[in-house]
Amino acid sequence: MVPNLGFDAYSPREIAERVQGLCVAKSETPLLSLAMLGMLAGAFIGLGSMFYVVVVSDPTLGFAASRVAGGVAFSLGLILVVVAGAELFTGNNLLAMAWAHGCLSTRDVLHNWTAVCAANFAGAVGLASLVFLSGHAEMNGGAVGRTYLAIAAAKSELPFWTAFFRGVMCNVLVCMAIWMTLAGRSVVDKIVAIVMPISAFVAAGFEHSIANMYFLPLGM
Image (cartoon, rainbow, N blue to C red; front, side, top):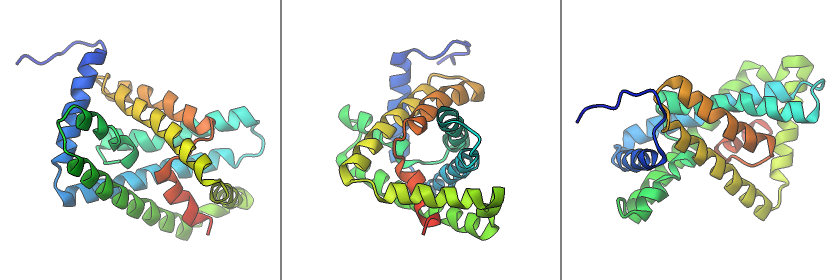
C-alpha cells in the first residue's frame, strides 16, 4: 500500500477508520505498558492543571481572559498525552466507537478503562505530591496555593448530578479534540486541533475527572 503523503487533513471517513484502528490497538496493549502509559498521562494532565493554576491565580485578569488563558494553558496536558503517546481515560472513551462497531468486546473496553483510570489516578496523585513538596503553592505570594484551595473546595461542593453532567460535557470536548488530532499529519496539526476544544471546556467550567485527581489532593 502506498502511503498517503499529502498535506491536507484526513477526511472524516479516514479519521473514523484511524480512530477504530487506534482503539483496537489500545485494547491489545499489555497491562504493564498500559499502566506505565496511564501513569504518564495522569502526570501530564497534572502538569497542564499546574500551568492552569499559575495563570488563573493572577487577580489582574478579567473573568473571560482568565478562563480562556487558563484553558490554553491547560491544553498542555492533552498535548503531552497525544504527542508523547500516553494513555488517558477520558480520551480512551473513544473505545466505545470500536465497541459499537463490534471490533471490541465489552470486557476489552472495561479492562482498558479500569486499568487506565487507575493508572491515571496514580500518576496525577504522584505529581500532586511532588508539586506540594516543591513549594509551588507559595508562588505569587501564596496566591497559587489559595487558588488550589478555592478550586478544590468548589469542586468538592458540587452536587453529584451537576458534577456528572459537567464531566460528560468535558468528555465530549476531549473526545472531539482527540478525534480531530487524527485528522492531522504533523505535531503542529495535532496541537492546533487540541487547543480550542480543551480551552472551551475549561472556559465553560466543565469537570475533567483526571484533572480533579490532581486538584483535590492539593486542596486537602
